[in-house]
Amino acid sequence: MAVREDVARDTKEAMKNRDKGRVTALRMISAALQNAEIEKGQPLNDEDEMAVLRRQVKQREESAEAYRKAGREEQAEAETDEAEILRAYLPTPLSDEELETLVDRAIEETGASSMREMGAVMGRANVMAAGRADGKKLSGIVRDRLQG
Image 1 (cartoon, helix red, strand yellow):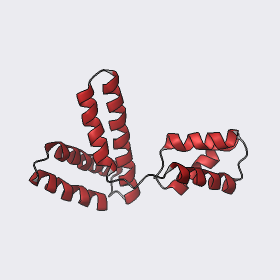
Image 2: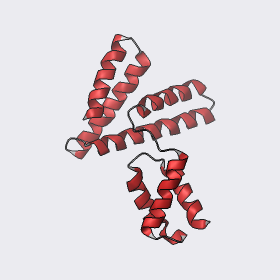
Image 3: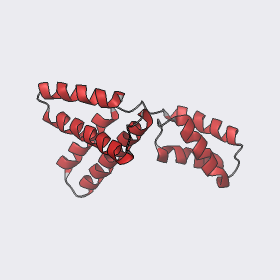
Image 4: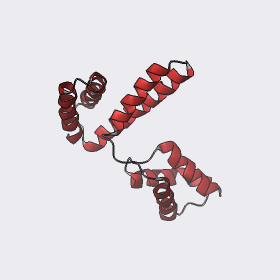
């Protein structure tokens, strides 16, 4: 519940500061968390909240990319701004070096030696990353390690 409390506090502050864009983004976060809770039928735990936030960031990034391709830079910028506000509530992502070390450990722990075992390595690496790694980046590193 810490995220929801932080969002509520930040929403009040943004309202006092008359920051309309931030208020809109924070209300969107609150609504997404509420909808996920209703869908689940019980209160969200911290992991569930982070999953909702990551989905929201991904949606904003995809929307921004689509707007840019359509030549609608103003809307793309708005989506990018919302994604940045969302990222503030997520844990700090792992650096490239940390990801490489993590993948090496996951390969060692699973005993993987070929691409056939990529699923096992990805499963272990995702657990070790605890939501702090981008899936595409992580799978790219795993693929490079198992192929090379």
